Amino acid sequence: MADLLRRPFGTHGAVHRITPADAGWRYVGFALHRLRPGERVAEATGGREVMLVMVEGRAAFRAAGRDWGVLGERMDVFERTPPHCLYVPNDQDWAAEAVTDCTIAVCSAPGHGGHPARRIGPEGITLTQRGEGTNTRWINNIAMEAEDHCDSLLVTEVFTPAGHWSSYPSHRHDEDDFPRITYLEETYYHRLNPADGWAVQRVYTDDGSLDEVMAVRDHDVVLVPRGHHPCGAPHGFGLYYLNVMAGPRRNWRFVAAPEMAGIG
Image (cartoon, rainbow, N blue to C red; front, side, top):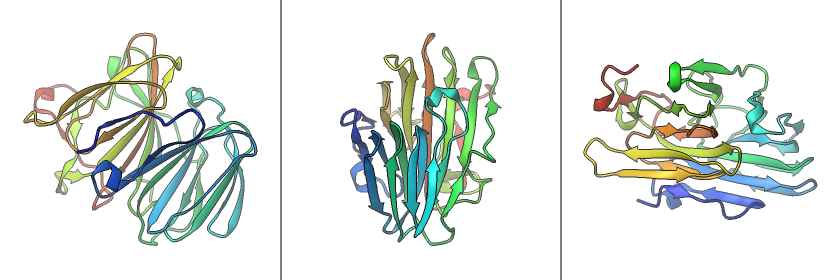
């Protein structure tokens, strides 16, 4: 299995490019572009569908033979406002030109032509509380199971306050045994507030064959091929992450870690 913690290549341009082959799995891809005004990125989707998420800033988009105009309102991800996103199916082209400094996430998975290109958010995306106490976090569901936007992709944003836990109680989705559990590969794109802060993420299996604890920094990506994968934000450091999941079926079913019995 490839290294789970991926640092960005740099601070400008294409700073992440994770393919299934590179990750050592079959479904999820993730790329990140940090552009300056006037800079452009253009790609073909090939056999994959993509969800373009405007993490920060504004950019003008063309995709699937159509001009989608300028997308993006959130200039700082920790504003916690709903993102502007663009879904592009397989076998299409897309291009973006930055209007301001911007960060564009490219979430990808196998596409089957089942959904047309469409703009997603900010309408219809509502910041929702999950958990309680120091397990409280806030969710922007972009394309989870309830949103029929994609063939394979599941995409969501999570804001974890300083001093809180997230993706917790610990859980896994690494078996194809629906409806008990589904097999979903997953990436976490992390942001920290302030940017020089840090958080922790553990990825571990019940049998201990995989057990890694990683200190994550601003713009890091963590791969979750299997196992449980909780995150913790220390006092003083707010945490954001963008989750991308995909597998053989578009359902999110998980099993809690044995030590989590009785923890809600």
